[in-house]
Each structure stands twice: as structure tokens, then as C-alpha cells.
Amino acid sequence: MTRFNHAVSVAFTVISSDKEGNDFTPAMLKEALLNRIRDMDNSPKGNEWLDAVGAPFDTVEEEEQTPKRFKFEARVFCEFEIVANSEEEAVSLLESATMETGNLGCLANGDPIVAKLTEIEDAGRGNWSAVAIDGEVI
Image 1 (cartoon, rainbow, N blue to C red):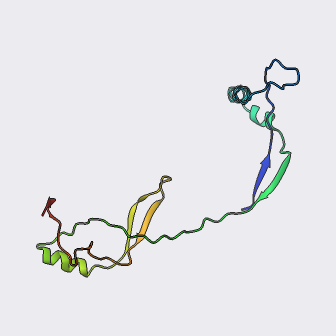
Image 2 (image 1 turned 135 degrees about the vertical axis):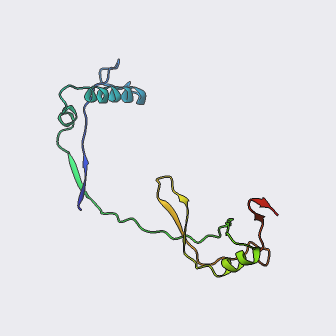
Image 3 (image 1 turned 60 degrees about the vertical axis):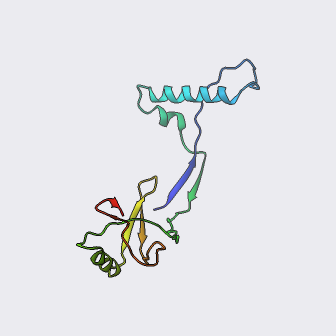
């Protein structure tokens, strides 16, 4: 869908001590503009914003932006639990596991961080060994 970027203006008044307005400060302009916004928001007419803005004085077509997928490679250290009758059975189940995807949480905007698991290996001990059983560290 084609999108357009419109430049518009809103007139507002500023009270100052200089006939030419040479004593304007950023704070004065901000306060005056915020007062204008408040007045437009509180207008009983309902269309004050449209009346105040009017037609655009410049318009350009926006380039359509398609989000890209950025792939990162990372080494993730984690703990996980496998329910089994023995540590040997748990290791056997783990070693025969199928690599899938995993949810690592989410970004600030709520989008999930999904990881494709390509390899799983013991965390440096040389072979799989449980570090806790039923929540108790061993």
C-alpha cells in the first residue's frame, strides 16, 4: 500500500516582550504550543484539529519498508529438566532428542525471541551428568 508523508503546520500564539519575537526561548515556544494543543483537545467543535492544520504544504511518497530478518549466532547456556526414572535414562533421552526451536523470551515490543536449536552439548564437563535431582543440587 502506498503511504505518503505530509508536512503540515499548526499556528499558535506566543506572548513575549519583544515586538519582533526575538526573545523567544524554547521553553516559551513549548509552553505556547502545549497550550494550543490543550485548547484544540478541549474544543467543543470536535474538528478543531482539522481546522487548525488545514491542507499539507508538502507531500512526499514514503518508500515502502519491508522488515528484514536478522540472524544472530550465539552460544546459550541454560539448564533444563528431563523427567526420567534414572540419570542414565535421562541422558539417553537427551542424547536422542530432536533439535527444534525454543522460545528464549521476548523483545521489549512483545515479539518472541525464537531460537533454532542446531546443536546441544554438555556444558564443558566432558559428558552429561545431572546437576540436581528433584530440585536438589547434587
